[in-house]
Length: 401
Ligand SMILES: *Cc1c(COP(=O)(O)O)cnc(C)c1O
Image (cartoon, rainbow, N blue to C red; front, side, top):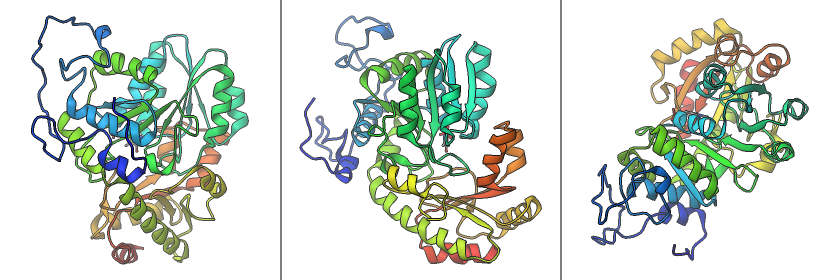
């Protein structure tokens, strides 16, 4: 493969994985919707025959538009390879089902994206996989949880929805003691917020539905890492389990990724303005944003993050006050959409009641519940600060607060 002469992240986001189309000289990347490709010779039909230089054969194995996005992300993350999946959840499932077998032990962050939390608690044990859930900001707890058969440690930083951070370098040291793979859901941080491979993450996972796409119009997932780990994922999760990304979504997401560095600068700027404004508001009792000095792990955020991204949470009082405000938001907000999801150019906000989450998705008790409540009180508004004018976002929030 030709080696690039450029190294700037904005250049890589735009040109990585792409180039003028050899068939037409088109400057923009082509969208190849084809599910199959005409063979020039009789070829094998086992996934085990797939090589780096294999011709295009069938779109579940590889598709030129999807491969273009995979190369772009691998270049941005500074790793050898990447695999696109149908959704962020398909990426998480791919990691668990490729690298864990019956009798293996996995340690998963006690708080995580709710779908991942439920998958790890409800599905993995059915396959004979032993699970432990650990507050990853408590390194003693993690040290006590690792065992000889720990094959995988799965973290998320900042963690959805409470924005607690994980010291990735410290977790990597613990993973190395038992030779466990370290996978991290980096959706909130984005490739710009954390230089994941430099911090030692083996499998860098994103819900591409969020910041990578950036416009709220495509669902997808991605995992980036070494050629050998991604090769295993491509064989099992891609070709056999089959949760691959559609070329159309890959094309939309690649278009989004081209402006990711610029968008993240603007997202962070807006989030900082909103977080500071919320912190001063008399009806707001608490704000959590890694970029604020008041964040309990702000120092770690400064050490480990290059961009604080634009996810923040705030509290307004007890559960009933929060719920009443959520209802008001749903009917009165004009610019900010009261909706789940995040990372879009449009600002999004959603109410996350603590009791429901810690009893439903996370099933936390004792010190884990206490740590959750230290970040989230009785409930939080999770806000994904978009790219609108901050003055308009403030007017919108002022209207309801
Ligand atoms: C949205 C999200 C997911 C799941 O991604 P989908 O694309 O919705 O399947 C996983 N992790 C995090 C942190 C998310 O925000």
